[in-house]
Figure (cartoon, rainbow, N blue to C red):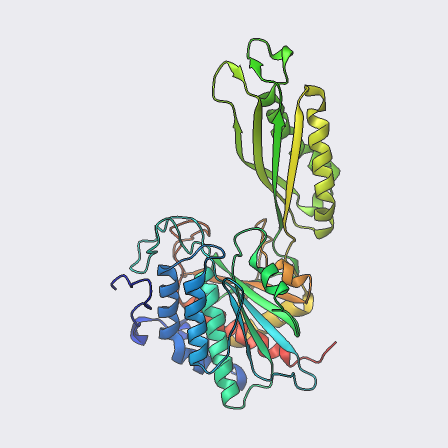
Length: 428
């Protein structure tokens, strides 16, 4: 497949070249689920081509202009009216503009941005942007939500959809503060009663879905500690504040203090990612910095962690004759899946992927800004299997990530069915 130009979509994909999800999952027996499966089977090749195009043209956070444009154009071609966000991103409503009696509008969320990681997947549709890759699977998320939306729009045109659905294509999931805040601030959750999303899981076989009630991801904050002294000769450390020694104490002692000051069941984890100080063997530097991430699985412990962290840093360096500055950038809270919403995802998975499709997923210390939506409305995130059965287990945020493209159809089916089921539930 030739490399597409930046302003062109990739070449079409033949349906014969794209394995059907039905090679793994049985045909749904519920008439509504079967109707969704039939529509998405017809869209299968187009969606794979769309995902490959996104993979070839990754864009970093808040620069997702081309990605926003091609999504919007496809929605308009389906007779829908996308609402563009400031900068990049969009949302689009399907079905009744006013929810019918006993129903409510349900949102399906995708994230558009890529990572500053070189693409080493070695496939014909690998990134055309040097040093940027869809190494977290957001191209799959976006295409799955688009596919769910196109299928639901087809049902709406046939008069078979009495549920209001909002597709949310948000920018900037990979940075802090994330694009979910942009969506919320621009009214993207207005009128929404529940929200769902998926996240690629390359440790889980395609056709399977991982769920969990409660925290499924961690809070994730960025922390920076800067230590300052007068500087001096390494032969006379007693005459100055030893910045490097002080940084060493912060690096080793502060994580231990957090483990004793916060409930160990909360999964608190402080890990350092970078340390910088000095440039000579025999000179104590004037300043040094250590940076890391503070993560926590429990939202209540997360709310306490900032104060405990800052106090611990101050207590550790106080005897050492240095000055210290602490910066704590609050990132995202944990994604706390609501029990009822998780039940909807599990029911949807069994309806469209088979009775054995659901697995209990592990908690992750990774951060996800989908969490901010769940501070406003109930909802849940599921792990979407992307590994070819018997194939290699990849990891996200690595440039060699490969996904089994049947996951696109699986994700679209799961989300479309979840929106339908959730929207028809009586209002609480």
